[in-house]
Length: 347
Image (tube, rainbow, N blue to C red; front, side, top):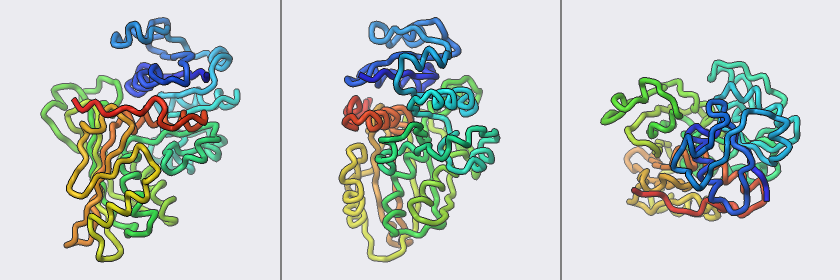
């Protein structure tokens, strides 16, 4: 049984990883690391884990951690990866990283959008983008997997069949997206406080959100040419959940919602975690919250010959932690759904 270490375990992503791994039948949590809560029991920080997971949290000691653990899942701020990832890679350990540092093949893209020096260019060439539906075979043998961002996961999987199938123009793609407040992480910034978010709805990162180049990179790979998108995220007053509405111009007339539904069903026929909804049925965040599913509805606006694709995920699930466990299963040659085959919480 493989032992897994989680570094950055007390943020929302890390805690969700712990929740999933405690129910996983084929792996064991070997260590949890938290700089803020070293020496405390995990259940002291999150009492909901009492009698379920009471492990004491360690400090970062690379040698000690590597001696007892096989795979590392890191949920750290982007700049913190510079200290941890190279050391783990040098020890030959397999890593699933949640920072943006290894999502881009071009370090200049990362440095431009994240305003931070990269410094780990030697690892970029072998890092694999952790979207199983697109890179399953590469994830299986990868040493370093870069877990995708939540908005990119929701958007890319929603649009991928149109772009890969050459059904749509690669220009003038517009993406409107909304996320729950947990997408900002576990922090006390004023913008994410109760009074600022409750009964409120607002756009942010307009024209310059950091997930824009990540979406463009992966859509460009699918298209075989450069793709630019107009991406606008919004914050909605719920804890978890995400929805993206993408507007993509079709190349040929004659498409109907029913025909595109059939096309999407064929494209995703082997993907357990992708649910293509029948025409007239639309995604809702309560149907995916707490799960690793993505729900997709594809619709044709006949007046404009445009596909309107609506996709929904849990930003902490398929958008982060559950997708990391899906990648972990692939890396360990386990059934991909192991530990993840549960429905959304709904309520």
